[in-house]
Amino acid sequence: MENQVQRKDRILLLALALVVAFPFLGSFGLLEPDEGRFAQIGREMAATGDFLVPRLNGIEQFYKPPLVYWISAVGYRLFGVSEWTARLPSALAFAGVIWLTGWMGWRLRGRKVGWMAALILASMMEPYALGRQITLDMSLTFWITAALACLVEVGMGSRSRWVGYLFFLCMGLGFLAKGPMAWVVPLSAALVWG
Image 1 (tube, rainbow, N blue to C red):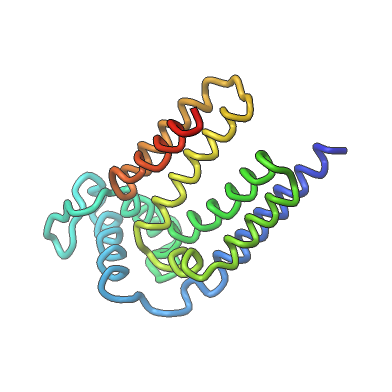
Image 2 (cartoon, rainbow, N blue to C red):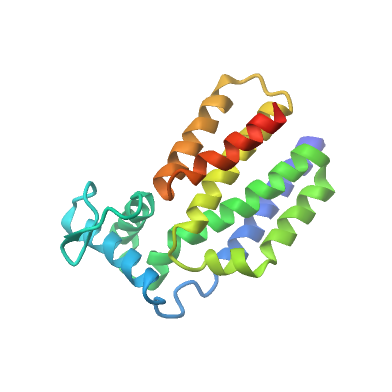
């Protein structure tokens, strides 16, 4: 019975995250200057097939790590070029952060706390706004949250070594999303918890 409730909660939480993150995602134009720049770099990657060197109007852009550009380029190839597709990486990241926050709450303090944590996060204005724009911030937030979820799993007694590997993989992907801050938060939490 407990597993049935947990499975139902996980599905309902995923539905909540998707309902919050995705409606009207492409209903307004790209906001300047960042959204236009990030969307165009991903579009050029998809058009040229060059996933190694990010370019904006043919000029190399090495100012930001490439993960969001890569995800955008893949999205453009799968779904076509649109505002909705440009914002897809941030919306997926926001939905993932909501889900992981609820899961960590369940794991640490039970069902009620997990639902409260997820609902509070889903109702906050800044994460909602960042989850609806193509920026690097929500992707970074997702990878940090995923690394912290791995830490919670280890802290709650998981003996799987894969969870530890996944912790470091999430930090690495976070680094590819925005840089070294992806290491600071999870490693600080691991040191304090340890």
